[in-house]
View (cartoon, rainbow over the protein chains, first blue to last red):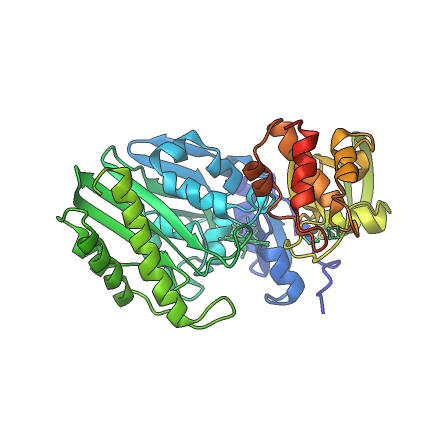
Length: 291
Length: 149
Ligand SMILES: Cc1cc2nc3c(=O)[nH]c(=O)nc-3n(C[C@H](O)[C@H](O)[C@H](O)COP(=O)(O)OP(=O)(O)OC[C@H]3O[C@@H](n4cnc5c(N)ncnc54)[C@H](O)[C@@H]3O)c2cc1C
Ligand code: FES
Ligand code: FES
């Protein structure tokens, strides 16, 4: 049975200051951004009914900027904004790749990066890129501003380091340097408009075909997105040969703890993780001429 | 109850509705404009696709506070003689017709942005519009033929 929402009040703040004041006064209220997760969850009864504060019109939280080796993305920036941004394409191309795979054009036009971060699905497609680019989340409230690193932000399945009166204002990423290459990967059950069965992101810092540094993150294979330090360690200091790439890909199993669910079994996810990591490394190796 | 003013197919309208009513509910139940269909009411089928400030979005996932002061185009705002509509009819891209308004809107947005798309680009643009009858081939052919490619 669908939960009727006719009695839900929606407050529309004129600016960020007013939004923060409302959030500090009303603990029983939920933030509405694009609504692509929240409205579905409210109607299905997955979350309890509450009044909403619609922040979707706050243009001051919708921007993409580049400075001092960082990219700053406002929480209300949509996937379409991200996929179409020259800054993201140049300094975090794997985030643009991820944004292009999210849902449909309709979802890309409305869904926001802030909503993806706070909804905290382990399969959220923006998260592996944020993990490999050491994202910092800027949280604001009437009490002030603080920044939390992405891996400290998720403490468990949908357990977040955010206070009830705080709003996510900005996601800040490291801009990729000249020697760095990377890709996002995603396995869905069909080609378009599919939730990830496994997804991930890889960034390699290369000196010729030698790996100076590697960052690997996978989603939908643990209660939160995870980094794969063992696999990263195998790659560091080595040349990108088939053997090294296979060894690194198998090491990813040490970082993941997938479950069986409607989209796939744990065993399937383990196999996908190894194979997708290998395919992504192989693709990068080909692109830089190491193979 | 709230009062919302927006541009609907080029005309200013004012409606009274609960603020968490969706644009889809307002179109169908308040304004009695039933061209925009409801399939799933959860973003999966694309039948409710409308243009919000020119961009395709799900009317079922858009509440009225997100529509206030903006411009909405529905299937009723597309000329029945538009080349895209004629191409759908001529290619046999319509069977039961439930998906058709959403598909026309999604393809209309694509062609406004990209007047001569590739087949791949057409398929990407309509990946969020499900059709259970046609098997998509004729739909893709209709969009390409309306574009003259
Ligand atoms: C058909 C369909 C397909 C989808 N496909 C994908 C997919 O392929 N990949 C994927 O990752 N996701 C997918 N999603 C999920 C969803 O679209 C994304 O997670 C999206 O980014 C959510 O953003 P939103 O702005 O719509 O969030 P909302 O639904 O508005 O909010 C989501 C949650 O975040 C909170 N919130 C939002 N913004 C803030 C903020 N700035 N500060 C504090 N709290 C905030 C809300 O209170 C709510 O709890 C899909 C959803 C649908 C319906
Ligand atoms: S009715 Fe809106 S997507 Fe199905
Ligand atoms: S024509 Fe019947 S669903 Fe498309």
